[in-house]
Amino acid sequence: MEEGNAPMQITLDVPEDILRALGEQPERFSRTALEMLAIEGYRSRRLSEGQVRRLLGFETRYQVHGFLKEHGVEPEFWMESPTLRLIGEEAGYWGHLRSAVTAGKAVGPLVHDARVVAICRARGIREVWTTDRDFSRFPGLVTRNPLPATP
Image 1 (cartoon, helix red, strand yellow):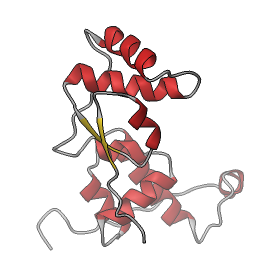
Image 2: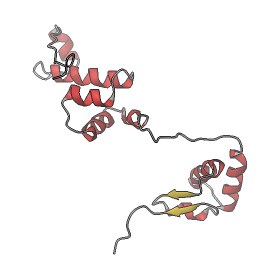
Image 3: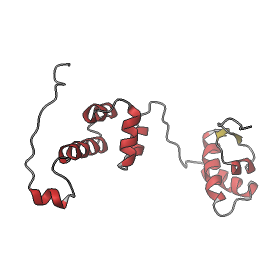
Image 4: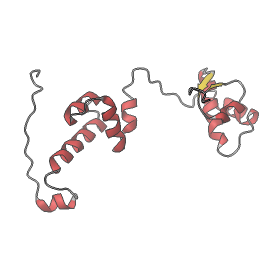
């Protein structure tokens, strides 16, 4: 094991009434405390995905993703992707939205699809991979189903 990476034994003295208030069994609390430390460390960006994996003894990052999702921190790991580019409404968006709503005859829930189309058009995105056939109603945006056709 690398220097500085050796496990440390830490003891917590927690009154029984507090354990009961937390709904914890004494024999399980050390794991729960470790998980709480991992969650808070990750949420506060003090621990990386890899550090969470090591801390909790997971073998794969997919286990970390499942654990984080289960505890409401799923989107955080997306931000670590080196290829992530967040896009949103910007200059020219409203004109694209007006055009998409009109051309696609979008009403009700389809207005959300029109918003996605408008953001794509404003950013120069010409193709969207989706299983949602409603996007085909908007001209000027190529839709491609990423799933193989089933016989």
